[in-house]
Length: 121
Image (cartoon, rainbow, N blue to C red; front, side, top):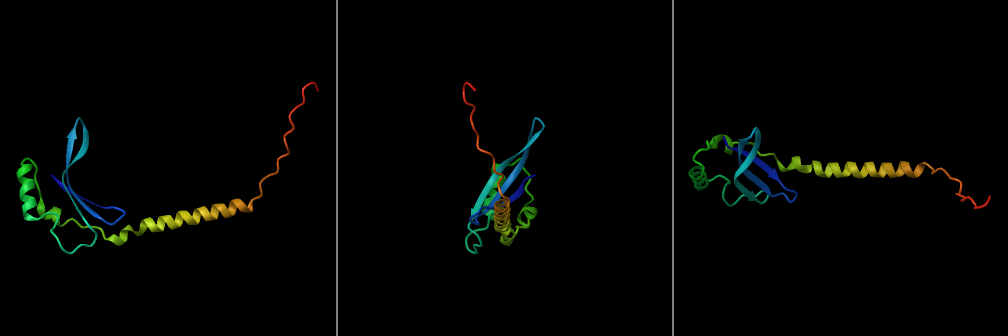
């Protein structure tokens, strides 16, 4: 049974992938049957799974069962959920600043200068 995989890249482009799980020699891998990319928040153009696309996918993959209602009704995460990257960057920057501040506050131990041994003594 094919299922939908959705992702959004760092520029905001939305990627819809129709994927089929394939099991060989005890290992399960996925095979991409269809891939659709669209700019973020677009209101014009075609849907990822219009009627012509559905018919073409069914004709080219007769052995695969497509549950179009479940595929089309798959919830797509909102773009606001992707703000975790900025939050993570801010946390890392704060951690680096705190570490640099703590490192500057601790004085380095002073080591005595190294005097090489003199030959013959």
